[in-house]
Length: 397
Image 1 (cartoon, rainbow, N blue to C red):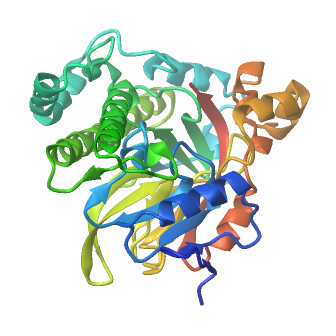
Image 2 (cartoon, rainbow, N blue to C red; image 1 turned 180 degrees about the vertical axis):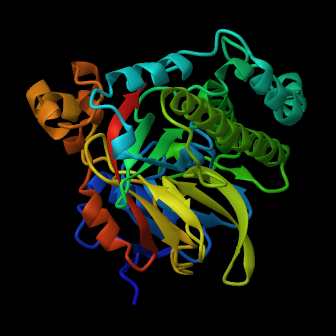
C-alpha cells in the first residue's frame, strides 16, 4: 500500500509522501511550479523531507523528457552520503572522544579548507579519473575555475550541513558516516550552467513561473556540455567521499586495535541527475535531495547532529521513481534557527555527542530539522530500515 497523497495541479500531478510531516507553503508552490513545466514526465514526486530550495524544492524527484533544469540539480552537484561499518564496538572507544574528533579534523580539511599538498593517492585519483575531463572543461568554460586547483579539494568536507560522524548501530558496531559533495568545482559548474540556461530562456523569450527553473534542451550544445560536466562533477563528489572515508579509517587504525570493515562502503548521491528507465520509457531523473531506492539498493538517510540516522534498503517503488528521502529535511531557515535556539538548547540537544557546541553551528542544531522518525514513517513503502545509527562524534565544517 502506498503512503503518497495525490495532488492535482492542472498540469503534471504531484505525488507526495508527506503524511504526518509539515510542508511549508513556499515548498508546495515550488512543486506546483515544477509540475507546470511541459517536459515533466508523468508526475513530480515529493519526499517527506521536502522543503524550500533554490528553484526546485529540496526533497523532490523530477523526471523529464528532452530537458534538464540545472538549478534543480543545484550547485552542490553530486552531494551525498557515504558510510562504512567496522568490527569495532563502543567498548573499543575511549571515554573521552575529543582526541578522536581532533585527529579526524587534522586529516580532513573542513569548511573552506583544502589539502596543503596533493599526495600520492589523491594525485593518482585525479590523474586517472578527472584530469582529462577537467582539461576539456577549462578549454571550453574557463570561467569554471576555483581559487585552488580542484585536486586540492579531493578529500575535503566543506561547510554548511556537511558532516562526518562516528556512530554506533543497534548491535553496538562502530560506523563511519559522512556527508559531502563536489566542493568548489561543482559549485562553479552549477553556477555557470544555471546562468547559461537563464540567458537561453531570455533570448528565446521563454516565460517561466520561476526564473530559476531555466532549462537546457536535449540536442543543444548547452545540454550536451552540461551533461558532460554534470557526470564529471558527480564522479568527483563520489571520489571526494571515498578519499575522506579512507582518511578517517586510517585515523581509526592508528588509534585502535586491528579491526575489519565491510568489503565496500555505501556511497550514494542525493543531488544529481541521471538517465533511467521508468514506466517503460527512458527519461532524465533529477533527484534534488532524494536518494535512489531501487529494489535492494542500500541508501543512507541522516537525521541531524543529535538524532538517529538510518541505513535503508530500497523497495523499488515505481510511483516514487525508485526514490526516497535524503535526510530529515530542514524545518526552518538557518536564520530562523539562529534566532530561535540558544547555546543551552543546542548543548542539551547534542548531549552525549562529541561535537561543536558554539554559536556558529546553531543553524545545524537538531531542532532546525524535521522529526526524522516522522520522515521515516511517511516513506515506509519506499524503504526498509536495515540499521539504525546514533552518532557519538560529529565533525562539522
